[in-house]
Structure formats: C-alpha cells, structure tokens
Image (cartoon, rainbow, N blue to C red):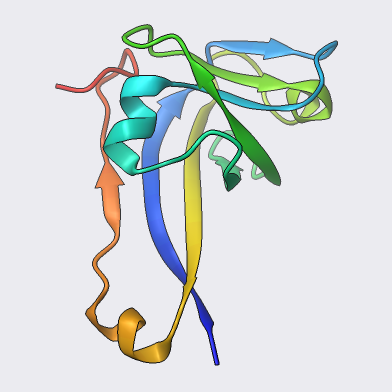
Amino acid sequence: MLVTIFKSKIHRVKVTQAELNYVGSITIDEDLMDAAGLYENEQVHVVNNNNGERLVTYVIKGQRGTGIICLNGAAARKAAVGDVVIIIAYAMMTPDEARAFEPTMVFPDVNNLLT
C-alpha cells in the first residue's frame, strides 16, 4: 500500500503574473523550485489565501532569481497579481517511508526571494 504525504511547499508567495493565453501551469522561480525540491512538470496544488481558490496544475521552470510566480492558462482566472498563494507538492510512499519522512518548507521574503 502507498499513502500520499505532504512532500514540500512554498509558503506565502505573491503572484507576479497571470497569463490567460498560455498553455497552462504555474511558472516558479527556479531558486524556489530547488529549495522546495520541485521538478519541472511535477504536479502541485496551489491555494490562494486571498480568495480561497484551490487548483491542481504542474510546474514550469521560471527564470532563476526573479521571484516569478505566474499562473498560466485557465489557472490565471483563479488569482490576481499580488494575491498570496501556497504551492504544495505531495509524494506517494510506503507507510514506513511516511513515518520517517520530513517535508520541506520554504518561506521566501516579500519579494518571493530566498533570504
């Protein structure tokens, strides 16, 4: 049996762009991706603290050091530039792995940069 466990999150980043006419996904600064252990094309959940919206999408690598958090395609309708979101990834593992697992939590500054 496998269980789904909270793997990592980027906590309280601001949406810097929303691009409706794009294929879809969320673009994330590569520094933030690395810190949270996120992979390009990995599924993530995005929770909008401003309006309560929740969505599931996948990660696109954004330019390193820019703080970019851009919702693309239909996801752009779920947040406005300036909204605060939490980006969460999950992993499937055995119960034994889950008991020993420690998730990664990233807390960027007000500019979405690592301090």
